[in-house]
Image (cartoon, rainbow over all chains, first blue to last red; front, side):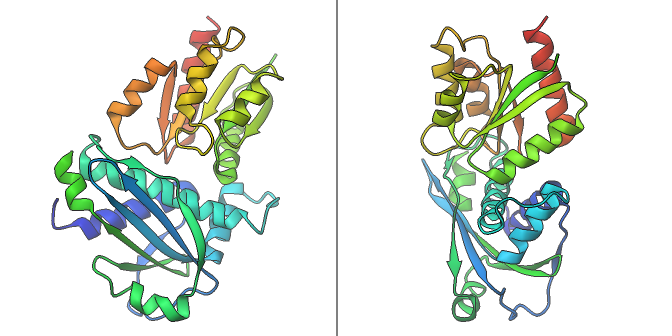
Length: 157
Length: 128
């Protein structure tokens, strides 16, 4: 697994955001600003090696993804649609990341992403200091992402 | 005469994305139906005439692969083409989908051109 695993994770998230919903991903200097009305989205990998990805983002990012994907059409599910969009973002990001680190010879299986409310004021400072955690600005929304187990997955491929 | 297309994905957002992409492709569409998983899709297929199914792979209740296998075991559905639209990272698992009876796959994140090309190729073969 190359040392640029953080770059690979960032690029996977960037590609997913841009291709799905034309949302840009930029670096931030102030990582202390936690997302309001936050969600934690998780994907577990299973199989020969275990690992996963988790993402913390505001509900507002989910709404932005949904609005961009619907192309101006009214959202018929404004309460659940944004969470669903965040789950799909995780799904697509995970696929891109695993393809990249295993050169398409992926041994693990992707799970189904889960989303839950997240107490960002309390837990964000801890999340962003974990090994491998990255913080970005996605069209004005603070987003943090972290992946684990990637080295073992890459070696098994 | 247009095609009746069934879109199967547990994400309503993705179903909307695929629907919108198909509408942009210039394909002659009579109707587009949606189902949230493989079992719901089979229920819909038993009631409605469908010319093409676009399905995710990883879904609760029933996966896209299981759904396709069951379609191939059903006389009325064995000829209905299936395109899998998926984030699945293993090219080996994607190639094995042909054994389930899947005609083509498109990887997520998909582009309008990728969807259009897959649909055109599959429908040309099916209706040749």
